[in-house]
Image (cartoon, rainbow, N blue to C red; front, side, top):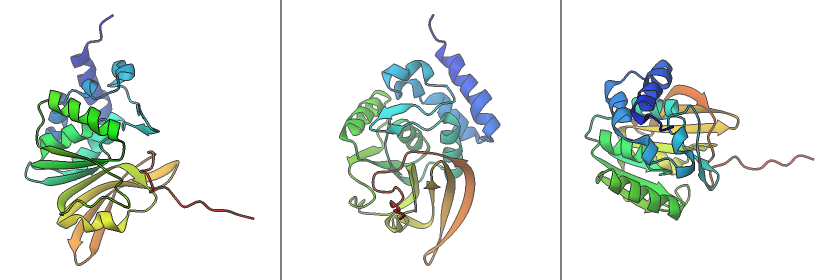
Length: 219
């Protein structure tokens, strides 16, 4: 039986995303327009619109649609922003960010993820994206600052260098803490090294490489 993709997409939006208080018309429109099924690994294509975190390989996963919607809404993109995405993954969030902003730089540690995302973005005719393969926590240097940073993997603590990449007045989405209960927060850069935190929701995501909690040994 052939899956009705458009019906499944609208059911995802109306029955999952909206009830999670994602009401921004721009976000709902981009979730309707960007073909999530084209960014899901082939083995999970029939689960593209399920309320599930889908495996990508290398121990990584796609966020649930509800989490993606809440993140995009919190970032409040207007179309004029320069965005840094830390963790390209499948490229789906990259595509959504690019549709909602002026330009996206996306950094990914796994070269095969970068290449697959590049192919998917090209097929979707999304061109305002620069993809970079690099380790973000210790090594990557973006060479500039950004209006918005979207961190799509968890961190035990927000690396100070991430905060330095955020313009005054900018905002950063990040999931931090210790599994299995982590907190998704939005950090607002208010100037003079001050950051205001806005708690969004609880979740559990795989850690970015080198961002996991330090091991603790007890006697």
